[in-house]
Image 1 (cartoon, rainbow, N blue to C red):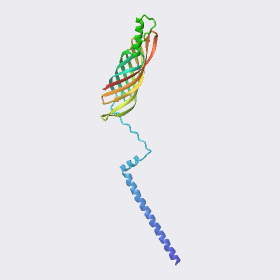
Image 2 (image 1 turned 180 degrees about the vertical axis):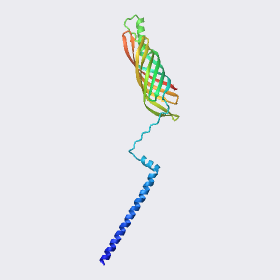
Image 3 (image 1 turned 90 degrees about the horizontal axis):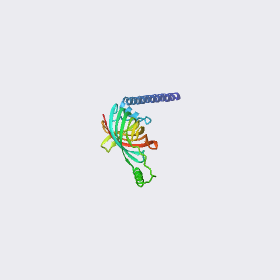
Image 4 (image 1 turned 90 degrees about the vertical axis):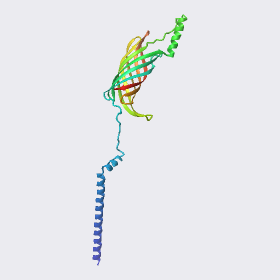
Length: 244
């Protein structure tokens, strides 16, 4: 009797185990089928990959204005700080730049300088004239060698660019650039070698119209009755250009 009971219990255990195994196999098959259908849906896979927070994506928009192998013609006007303290000078400049790529351009600058006495210079001349008219011998005439014109070859590098929303009227591309050059300065006393270095911001409004804001340091030597002097001045200009 006990043997029959044990045999029945063993039989029930085996049946329960087989049923449990069949259930697990069925569940695994269903899960595999679900995963297979997920893998077959490319859209879901793309969205799942987009949730990877460790993935870094850099998006840089292309320049809106093409400057590969293009010529830019421009004019600019500005002012001078430093230099001769007895003078106020304003350069009127013509510019030519050939853009090999959006990052590199080779150019030429020609400037004419309008000069007038500063307040300090005018005061010194008035004092010297008054002393001379009074017959005094102890007076000083300011030393001035007027800059007349300059011409320089220029190399510019444009490492950074972006876009600007201009009062919701249009989106303007701009480049921050570095520039430098070497050339010749014409003075009242003759000519002198000159060099310059600085930077600016170029705005490319359309495929054919541009503008620039530029600040440069320019150095040269002038000549006065006491000898040759080193002169350094800061030049700031605002200009417009035409891209061909």
